[in-house]
Picture 1: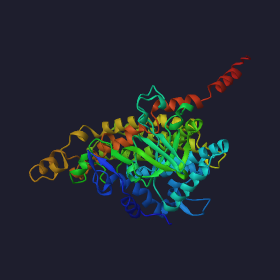
Picture 2 (picture 1 turned 45 degrees about the horizontal axis):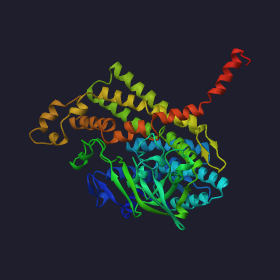
Picture 3 (picture 1 turned 180 degrees about the vertical axis):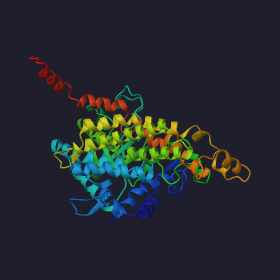
Picture 4 (picture 1 turned 90 degrees about the horizontal axis):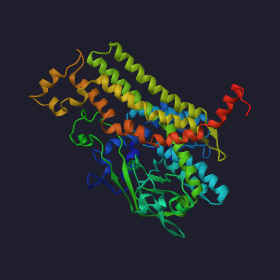
Amino acid sequence: MPLMTGEQYIESIRKINMEVYLLGKKVPVPVDDPILRPSLNSVRATYDLAQKPEYEDLMTAIDPESGKKINRFNNIHRSTDDLIKKVKMQRLLGQQTAACFQRCVGMDAFNALWSTTYDIDKKCGTSYFKNFKKFLDYAKENDLTVDGAMTDPKGDRSLAPHQQPDPDMYVHVVERRPDGIVVRGAKAHQTGALNSHEMIVMPTIAMSPEDKDYAVSFVVPLDTKGLFMIIGRQSCDTRKLEGGNIDVGNAEYGGVEALVVFDNVFVPNDRIFLNGETEFAGVLVERFAGYHRQSYGGCKVGVGDVLIGAAALVADYNGAAKASHVKDKLIEMTHLNETLYCCGIACSAEGTPTESGNYIINLLLANVCKQNVTRFPYEIVRLAEDIAGGIMVTAPSEKDLHDPKLGPIVEKYLKGVAGVSTEDRMRVLRLIENLSLGTAAVGYRTESMHGAGSPQAQRIMIARQGNIPAKKELAKKIAGIKK
């Protein structure tokens, strides 16, 4: 099957009979819901750009097994060049959508499972690698969007999965049958689940032998019986119901998150990638987290490019572009954003091959990348808000601007420099609001903190990967210390 167009992708999602709830009601046709549609458009961009010759090198790859061109989101990284192009692709998509384009988790799950299932089979004599390759070939052949689900609700964080008063706080196996397993639980914060054809489920933490039923990984279609989604709230999300395209800030693109519930979901044997091998749960988590922390050196940088551009534009519209402090703030925003990009490229360039044949990033540098992402976007946002001014959050509405009586007053008093319409000034102010505080902030500012693991998760990995004993030996040698 050739690569899908964006419109073909949308129609393929329309055919999936998902069970979706939003604001306390079941959504009859999620594809056409005005609150949800911008998030679908963001994924559509990953298909549209893959059709354009100027982006072919970044958006597509040649599958070495079939020789066919595939979307890079379904690619297994076979070199450091693949890892670098992944980051560059993510920056491009961030620039094009100014939102979360949602397919990174699936791509990162693919690459983590490739090497992990290989290692499990080698040690345990299982057939998980065969299962995974079969599904991956299916995803590549049909140009599917596949979500990756790792985060469990967790309940009482001081207790292991098997110790929870409610066993459903972590996804777990409740029944093992000759033809498969039955699972129950939920996955939280699932960006892109709503817009995916399939969902890969992975464990969320390292596990002990007592957690055997929780050490499970598998893939299911989004219309599987017993699977349903409750869409999360976002700031300003109901503005999309008001009509118009100014107050939403980013009218075409967006992202939504879901609580995905597994209510006694059956998984066939050939779609299982981990089933009780607890010693490999932590391995899978570590590898997926490493790939996903690399991703933030691309996607967040692309969105940062848009926010920096918006801040510079509003400075022009406000007549403040020549102020030295504004110039310095734009320099600082650029410095921070490019530093994040440097980290994404560095951990990719330092990647190494695994025994299974794919490449893994430098885990230390990937965690440094994500640790910086938990900080720098917050400063970039602060500086953008500083440049924009308070009118970003106090401006009258789009309806006021277009009202016969109020419109001329809004036009008069919200005017900036000559030659720039009040409407255009309001548009860029709302875009900054959207990226800083609104629906897009979920995929930029807040996700920068908690996506791919909260800050302490990276610090644990940095401590583990930092090799302080070796550094001590270097200091001893230079200082002339013999013991």
